[in-house]
Length: 346
Image (cartoon, rainbow, N blue to C red; front, top):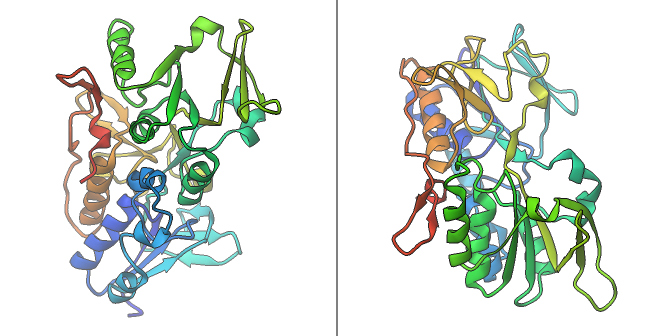
Protein backbone atom coordinates (compact mmCIF):
# COMPACT_ATOMS: atom_id res chain seq x y z
CA UNK A 1 0.00 0.00 0.00
CA UNK A 2 2.98 2.36 0.44
CA UNK A 3 3.29 2.60 -3.37
CA UNK A 4 -0.43 3.07 -3.97
CA UNK A 5 -1.59 6.36 -5.43
CA UNK A 6 -3.28 8.63 -2.93
CA UNK A 7 -6.41 10.31 -4.25
CA UNK A 8 -7.65 13.11 -1.98
CA UNK A 9 -11.12 14.64 -2.34
CA UNK A 10 -12.12 17.89 -0.66
CA UNK A 11 -15.88 17.83 -0.13
CA UNK A 12 -18.43 15.11 0.64
CA UNK A 13 -21.37 16.08 -1.51
CA UNK A 14 -22.73 14.56 -4.71
CA UNK A 15 -19.60 15.22 -6.79
CA UNK A 16 -17.14 14.03 -4.14
CA UNK A 17 -18.95 10.81 -3.37
CA UNK A 18 -19.55 9.93 -7.01
CA UNK A 19 -15.86 10.53 -7.65
CA UNK A 20 -14.83 8.32 -4.72
CA UNK A 21 -17.08 5.50 -5.92
CA UNK A 22 -15.66 5.72 -9.45
CA UNK A 23 -12.06 5.95 -8.23
CA UNK A 24 -12.46 2.84 -6.12
CA UNK A 25 -13.93 0.91 -9.07
CA UNK A 26 -11.22 2.01 -11.51
CA UNK A 27 -8.22 2.05 -9.18
CA UNK A 28 -8.90 -0.69 -6.61
CA UNK A 29 -5.43 -0.58 -5.03
CA UNK A 30 -5.38 3.16 -4.42
CA UNK A 31 -5.75 5.11 -1.20
CA UNK A 32 -8.77 7.44 -1.10
CA UNK A 33 -9.22 10.17 1.50
CA UNK A 34 -12.25 12.43 1.63
CA UNK A 35 -12.01 15.59 3.75
CA UNK A 36 -15.15 17.55 4.65
CA UNK A 37 -16.21 20.25 7.09
CA UNK A 38 -19.59 18.53 7.42
CA UNK A 39 -20.30 16.59 10.59
CA UNK A 40 -22.81 14.38 8.80
CA UNK A 41 -21.99 11.69 6.23
CA UNK A 42 -23.20 12.28 2.68
CA UNK A 43 -26.87 13.22 2.54
CA UNK A 44 -29.11 14.61 -0.18
CA UNK A 45 -29.62 18.34 0.43
CA UNK A 46 -32.42 18.35 -2.11
CA UNK A 47 -34.42 16.28 0.38
CA UNK A 48 -34.30 18.93 3.12
CA UNK A 49 -37.90 20.11 2.48
CA UNK A 50 -38.93 16.76 4.03
CA UNK A 51 -38.03 18.32 7.39
CA UNK A 52 -41.21 20.42 7.10
CA UNK A 53 -43.24 17.24 6.70
CA UNK A 54 -42.10 16.12 10.15
CA UNK A 55 -38.95 14.14 9.30
CA UNK A 56 -36.31 15.27 11.83
CA UNK A 57 -34.09 12.18 12.16
CA UNK A 58 -30.84 13.00 10.33
CA UNK A 59 -30.14 9.30 9.79
CA UNK A 60 -33.04 9.11 7.35
CA UNK A 61 -31.33 11.66 5.12
CA UNK A 62 -27.97 9.89 4.98
CA UNK A 63 -27.28 8.16 1.67
CA UNK A 64 -24.09 6.29 2.56
CA UNK A 65 -23.71 5.00 6.15
CA UNK A 66 -20.32 4.68 7.84
CA UNK A 67 -20.10 1.02 6.81
CA UNK A 68 -20.08 2.03 3.13
CA UNK A 69 -16.87 4.00 3.59
CA UNK A 70 -15.21 1.21 5.58
CA UNK A 71 -16.18 -1.43 3.03
CA UNK A 72 -14.85 0.65 0.14
CA UNK A 73 -11.70 1.71 2.00
CA UNK A 74 -12.50 5.41 1.78
CA UNK A 75 -11.03 7.36 4.69
CA UNK A 76 -13.75 9.89 5.56
CA UNK A 77 -12.43 12.83 7.58
CA UNK A 78 -15.53 14.62 8.89
CA UNK A 79 -15.62 17.98 10.71
CA UNK A 80 -12.20 18.69 9.21
CA UNK A 81 -11.34 21.98 7.54
CA UNK A 82 -8.75 22.46 4.81
CA UNK A 83 -7.02 25.83 5.15
CA UNK A 84 -4.41 25.69 2.38
CA UNK A 85 -3.37 23.74 -0.72
CA UNK A 86 0.22 23.68 -1.99
CA UNK A 87 0.19 22.62 -5.63
CA UNK A 88 4.00 22.54 -5.92
CA UNK A 89 4.56 20.10 -3.04
CA UNK A 90 1.16 18.44 -3.59
CA UNK A 91 0.02 18.84 -0.01
CA UNK A 92 -2.97 20.25 1.78
CA UNK A 93 -2.94 21.67 5.30
CA UNK A 94 -5.76 21.13 7.77
CA UNK A 95 -6.89 23.66 10.35
CA UNK A 96 -5.29 21.66 13.17
CA UNK A 97 -1.93 21.90 11.30
CA UNK A 98 -1.84 18.35 9.92
CA UNK A 99 -0.44 18.05 6.39
CA UNK A 100 -1.68 15.48 3.87
CA UNK A 101 0.22 14.57 0.71
CA UNK A 102 -1.74 13.76 -2.45
CA UNK A 103 -0.92 12.26 -5.81
CA UNK A 104 -4.17 13.60 -7.23
CA UNK A 105 -6.55 16.12 -5.69
CA UNK A 106 -10.21 16.65 -6.55
CA UNK A 107 -11.70 19.89 -5.26
CA UNK A 108 -15.42 19.26 -4.82
CA UNK A 109 -16.03 21.69 -1.97
CA UNK A 110 -19.25 23.02 -3.46
CA UNK A 111 -20.70 26.42 -2.63
CA UNK A 112 -22.34 28.30 0.21
CA UNK A 113 -25.37 30.56 0.16
CA UNK A 114 -24.63 34.09 -0.94
CA UNK A 115 -25.83 37.06 1.11
CA UNK A 116 -25.46 40.54 -0.41
CA UNK A 117 -23.25 42.83 1.63
CA UNK A 118 -26.05 45.32 2.29
CA UNK A 119 -27.94 42.63 4.20
CA UNK A 120 -24.99 41.34 6.26
CA UNK A 121 -25.91 43.42 9.33
CA UNK A 122 -29.28 41.63 9.45
CA UNK A 123 -27.78 38.14 9.32
CA UNK A 124 -28.82 37.26 12.93
CA UNK A 125 -32.45 37.89 11.95
CA UNK A 126 -32.35 35.67 8.86
CA UNK A 127 -32.60 31.88 8.71
CA UNK A 128 -30.63 29.79 6.23
CA UNK A 129 -31.36 26.52 4.50
CA UNK A 130 -27.98 25.14 3.45
CA UNK A 131 -27.57 22.43 6.08
CA UNK A 132 -29.70 19.91 7.96
CA UNK A 133 -29.54 21.80 11.27
CA UNK A 134 -30.60 25.01 9.53
CA UNK A 135 -33.63 23.31 7.96
CA UNK A 136 -34.64 21.95 11.38
CA UNK A 137 -34.29 25.40 12.93
CA UNK A 138 -36.62 26.92 10.34
CA UNK A 139 -39.17 24.13 10.75
CA UNK A 140 -39.15 24.50 14.52
CA UNK A 141 -39.41 28.29 14.37
CA UNK A 142 -42.21 28.48 11.82
CA UNK A 143 -45.67 28.23 13.44
CA UNK A 144 -48.52 26.24 11.91
CA UNK A 145 -49.63 27.99 8.74
CA UNK A 146 -46.92 30.55 9.40
CA UNK A 147 -45.72 33.30 7.11
CA UNK A 148 -42.35 32.92 5.37
CA UNK A 149 -40.79 35.93 3.67
CA UNK A 150 -38.29 34.91 1.00
CA UNK A 151 -35.68 37.37 -0.20
CA UNK A 152 -34.33 36.91 -3.72
CA UNK A 153 -35.89 33.59 -4.62
CA UNK A 154 -33.30 31.39 -6.33
CA UNK A 155 -34.31 27.91 -7.49
CA UNK A 156 -33.47 26.32 -4.11
CA UNK A 157 -35.77 28.78 -2.38
CA UNK A 158 -38.54 28.35 -4.92
CA UNK A 159 -38.32 24.57 -4.53
CA UNK A 160 -38.67 24.87 -0.76
CA UNK A 161 -41.57 27.28 -1.22
CA UNK A 162 -43.49 24.67 -3.22
CA UNK A 163 -43.46 22.42 -0.17
CA UNK A 164 -44.35 25.24 2.22
CA UNK A 165 -47.32 26.30 0.11
CA UNK A 166 -48.51 22.70 -0.15
CA UNK A 167 -48.39 22.54 3.66
CA UNK A 168 -50.56 25.69 3.77
CA UNK A 169 -47.92 28.13 4.89
CA UNK A 170 -48.02 31.63 3.50
CA UNK A 171 -45.02 32.52 1.31
CA UNK A 172 -44.24 36.09 0.27
CA UNK A 173 -41.42 36.47 -2.25
CA UNK A 174 -39.51 39.73 -2.41
CA UNK A 175 -38.45 39.36 -6.04
CA UNK A 176 -35.33 40.98 -7.47
CA UNK A 177 -32.51 40.25 -9.91
CA UNK A 178 -31.68 36.97 -8.09
CA UNK A 179 -35.16 35.52 -8.59
CA UNK A 180 -34.97 32.28 -10.64
CA UNK A 181 -31.14 32.10 -10.26
CA UNK A 182 -29.22 30.44 -11.89
CA UNK A 183 -31.72 30.65 -14.73
CA UNK A 184 -31.43 33.72 -16.93
CA UNK A 185 -34.86 35.20 -17.55
CA UNK A 186 -35.14 38.17 -19.90
CA UNK A 187 -37.02 41.33 -18.93
CA UNK A 188 -39.54 40.54 -21.64
CA UNK A 189 -40.24 37.06 -20.24
CA UNK A 190 -40.09 37.97 -16.55
CA UNK A 191 -43.79 39.00 -16.18
CA UNK A 192 -44.90 35.57 -17.43
CA UNK A 193 -42.73 33.76 -14.90
CA UNK A 194 -43.77 36.04 -12.05
CA UNK A 195 -47.40 35.38 -13.00
CA UNK A 196 -46.63 31.64 -12.89
CA UNK A 197 -45.34 31.99 -9.33
CA UNK A 198 -48.55 33.73 -8.31
CA UNK A 199 -50.48 30.93 -10.00
CA UNK A 200 -48.53 28.48 -7.79
CA UNK A 201 -49.63 30.27 -4.61
CA UNK A 202 -46.78 32.73 -4.07
CA UNK A 203 -47.44 36.27 -2.97
CA UNK A 204 -44.92 38.28 -5.01
CA UNK A 205 -43.66 41.77 -4.30
CA UNK A 206 -41.29 43.30 -6.83
CA UNK A 207 -38.55 44.90 -4.69
CA UNK A 208 -37.98 47.80 -7.07
CA UNK A 209 -41.63 48.84 -6.75
CA UNK A 210 -41.08 49.55 -3.04
CA UNK A 211 -37.70 51.15 -3.40
CA UNK A 212 -35.91 47.99 -2.18
CA UNK A 213 -35.41 46.78 1.38
CA UNK A 214 -34.33 49.36 3.96
CA UNK A 215 -34.27 47.38 7.23
CA UNK A 216 -35.07 44.08 8.94
CA UNK A 217 -35.92 44.10 12.65
CA UNK A 218 -37.61 42.17 15.44
CA UNK A 219 -41.37 42.39 15.37
CA UNK A 220 -43.16 44.31 18.11
CA UNK A 221 -44.95 42.40 20.92
CA UNK A 222 -48.15 40.83 19.64
CA UNK A 223 -47.00 40.98 16.01
CA UNK A 224 -45.10 38.44 13.88
CA UNK A 225 -41.44 37.88 14.80
CA UNK A 226 -39.96 39.83 11.87
CA UNK A 227 -40.59 43.31 10.45
CA UNK A 228 -39.32 44.47 7.07
CA UNK A 229 -39.26 48.16 6.17
CA UNK A 230 -38.94 49.34 2.58
CA UNK A 231 -37.48 52.58 1.30
CA UNK A 232 -40.92 53.83 0.30
CA UNK A 233 -41.98 53.59 3.96
CA UNK A 234 -44.16 50.49 3.60
CA UNK A 235 -43.76 47.47 5.89
CA UNK A 236 -44.12 43.70 5.73
CA UNK A 237 -44.44 41.37 8.72
CA UNK A 238 -43.69 37.65 8.82
CA UNK A 239 -42.66 34.80 11.09
CA UNK A 240 -39.43 33.88 9.29
CA UNK A 241 -37.21 35.69 6.80
CA UNK A 242 -35.06 33.51 4.53
CA UNK A 243 -32.50 34.75 1.98
CA UNK A 244 -32.07 32.91 -1.32
CA UNK A 245 -29.58 34.82 -3.48
CA UNK A 246 -27.77 31.98 -5.22
CA UNK A 247 -24.42 30.71 -4.05
CA UNK A 248 -20.71 31.44 -4.07
CA UNK A 249 -17.99 28.77 -4.43
CA UNK A 250 -16.17 27.67 -1.27
CA UNK A 251 -12.56 28.19 -2.28
CA UNK A 252 -10.88 30.24 0.46
CA UNK A 253 -8.36 27.44 1.01
CA UNK A 254 -7.29 27.57 -2.65
CA UNK A 255 -6.05 31.17 -2.51
CA UNK A 256 -2.29 31.05 -2.98
CA UNK A 257 -2.40 27.46 -4.20
CA UNK A 258 -1.01 28.32 -7.60
CA UNK A 259 -4.23 27.21 -9.34
CA UNK A 260 -6.11 29.75 -11.48
CA UNK A 261 -9.36 31.09 -9.99
CA UNK A 262 -11.92 33.50 -11.43
CA UNK A 263 -15.16 33.13 -9.49
CA UNK A 264 -14.61 29.37 -9.41
CA UNK A 265 -11.62 27.17 -10.15
CA UNK A 266 -10.92 27.36 -13.88
CA UNK A 267 -10.83 23.92 -15.48
CA UNK A 268 -10.41 22.47 -18.95
CA UNK A 269 -13.19 20.36 -20.50
CA UNK A 270 -11.58 17.30 -18.84
CA UNK A 271 -12.01 19.09 -15.45
CA UNK A 272 -8.27 19.46 -14.92
CA UNK A 273 -7.16 22.78 -13.40
CA UNK A 274 -3.99 24.63 -14.35
CA UNK A 275 -2.11 22.03 -12.26
CA UNK A 276 -1.95 18.63 -13.93
CA UNK A 277 -2.75 16.66 -10.74
CA UNK A 278 -5.56 18.88 -9.43
CA UNK A 279 -9.12 18.57 -10.73
CA UNK A 280 -12.38 20.23 -9.75
CA UNK A 281 -16.04 19.24 -9.95
CA UNK A 282 -19.33 20.79 -8.87
CA UNK A 283 -20.52 24.29 -8.04
CA UNK A 284 -16.97 25.43 -7.25
CA UNK A 285 -15.60 25.18 -10.80
CA UNK A 286 -15.97 26.94 -14.14
CA UNK A 287 -15.55 24.70 -17.18
CA UNK A 288 -14.13 25.96 -20.46
CA UNK A 289 -16.95 25.69 -23.00
CA UNK A 290 -15.94 25.97 -26.66
CA UNK A 291 -19.43 26.77 -27.93
CA UNK A 292 -19.51 30.09 -26.08
CA UNK A 293 -15.73 30.58 -25.76
CA UNK A 294 -15.74 31.16 -22.01
CA UNK A 295 -15.64 29.42 -18.64
CA UNK A 296 -19.12 28.44 -17.44
CA UNK A 297 -20.72 27.17 -14.25
CA UNK A 298 -23.04 24.16 -14.55
CA UNK A 299 -25.51 23.64 -11.73
CA UNK A 300 -27.98 20.99 -10.62
CA UNK A 301 -27.73 17.53 -9.10
CA UNK A 302 -27.38 15.71 -12.44
CA UNK A 303 -24.57 17.96 -13.65
CA UNK A 304 -22.68 17.86 -10.36
CA UNK A 305 -22.90 14.08 -10.12
CA UNK A 306 -21.69 13.70 -13.72
CA UNK A 307 -18.76 16.02 -13.01
CA UNK A 308 -17.66 13.86 -10.09
CA UNK A 309 -17.70 10.74 -12.25
CA UNK A 310 -15.94 12.43 -15.17
CA UNK A 311 -13.17 13.82 -12.96
CA UNK A 312 -12.54 10.38 -11.45
CA UNK A 313 -12.46 8.72 -14.87
CA UNK A 314 -9.94 11.23 -16.14
CA UNK A 315 -7.84 10.96 -12.99
CA UNK A 316 -7.59 7.24 -13.69
CA UNK A 317 -6.52 7.49 -17.31
CA UNK A 318 -9.51 8.46 -19.43
CA UNK A 319 -9.43 11.52 -21.65
CA UNK A 320 -13.06 12.58 -21.85
CA UNK A 321 -14.64 16.02 -22.18
CA UNK A 322 -17.49 17.49 -20.20
CA UNK A 323 -21.02 17.29 -21.62
CA UNK A 324 -23.93 19.01 -19.82
CA UNK A 325 -26.56 16.57 -18.58
CA UNK A 326 -29.68 18.60 -19.23
CA UNK A 327 -31.09 21.76 -20.78
CA UNK A 328 -30.83 24.51 -18.16
CA UNK A 329 -33.82 26.50 -19.43
CA UNK A 330 -36.60 27.45 -17.04
CA UNK A 331 -39.91 26.15 -18.38
CA UNK A 332 -43.61 26.89 -18.04
CA UNK A 333 -45.98 23.94 -17.75
CA UNK A 334 -49.31 23.63 -19.52
CA UNK A 335 -51.13 24.60 -16.32
CA UNK A 336 -49.15 27.81 -15.94
CA UNK A 337 -46.51 26.84 -13.37
CA UNK A 338 -42.74 27.03 -13.54
CA UNK A 339 -40.59 23.94 -13.80
CA UNK A 340 -36.83 24.00 -13.30
CA UNK A 341 -34.51 21.17 -14.41
CA UNK A 342 -32.55 21.90 -11.22
CA UNK A 343 -35.44 20.33 -9.29
CA UNK A 344 -34.76 16.99 -10.99
CA UNK A 345 -32.42 14.88 -8.90
CA UNK A 346 -33.49 11.27 -9.31
